[in-house]
Image (tube, rainbow, N blue to C red):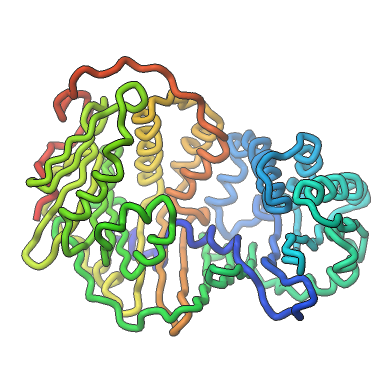
Length: 504
């Protein structure tokens, strides 16, 4: 496994690559539309023909990937509607008009930008390579879709237009703001670099600016994201305190520091950080049993953090609505969920000689004694490193998918392992290799995130993509109301030997 680690030098903050897709480009006169995002994408057809990243090519060519084309276009059309109109409920005819548009954007070479007009509406200018037949399709579908989006958002309607210029199908949402000829001249300035399959520049009010470049070379997908922040980044980070109970052999290891202020801006996470603010985060996973992914948060008062989590969750579990009962033991620094058939989730306060942590796991880890490899520790202990994550994606994807299914069990939702998304995830997993992501402070206002991977996405991102493609989850099914919580060891097939808490 150490050999696999040495082949990669980069990693993932979940969500930083996706963050770039919603950001704003500056430099226009105040009276002109202000560009939000600018991109150049070679298209999926080119990706399936390239030979520089064989795992990506193989995944895109799988029958299970082809079967997901319909859900992908449907979901992408919905996203395009929400982005253009600012509304969620899309008319069926508008979505039908959008599907051939997003199909071309997914398959063909495209360049484009989104803009914010002076009236606060989002406008589009894009160009797609295509023949006369595709041009006719755009001339029919584009005005229909844009007109519907403009009607939904209100205000004065624009003038959508499609033109055929120099082999490009050029579409603008309002030719009164930017004519197709001017749009193509501007879009042609977006750089085309060798082996780069996606170039994206973006900036949005309230978010950092970002520039993303994704290339296929040397058998892998190599990504780089430059993030420019308005606030100064810390030039001196606190010394790492890697938990001594994290032991090898691992299939994943993540270390992050200085990221809690960003996490505190996420509505789903912020409430749990109000009682205590961890300064460092660690995630690690073992490969022998599913759900063996663990989290540790470095904090001065782990018991206070656990109390805060209990206070937020104590009213969330009700017989008949959820499975499981909360068991809070403040004197022991312990919060666990009992009564589940296959897991035993628990938060635990762990004190070592010089640090204290809150740890989370689906069940207690078995004793392990092998220290982390020196090469990995050296990668983490760099002065300007904010985040490091290494994973064997094939193994880790199974963990994250199991946690997703565990969430279904807790919320009394039926499990369906035969969905297209689940079948796709099962098919691609054997083709996944290592994924390494790093986030380094490279300037007072600049963070550089790099990733080296087999298909461009981490295991967690691939899992979330599969569930997103499957669409909304089914309704809750009735389950018998439990009369008592079973013992922790009940119903844990193949579970590791349990210990009361991670070893110090």
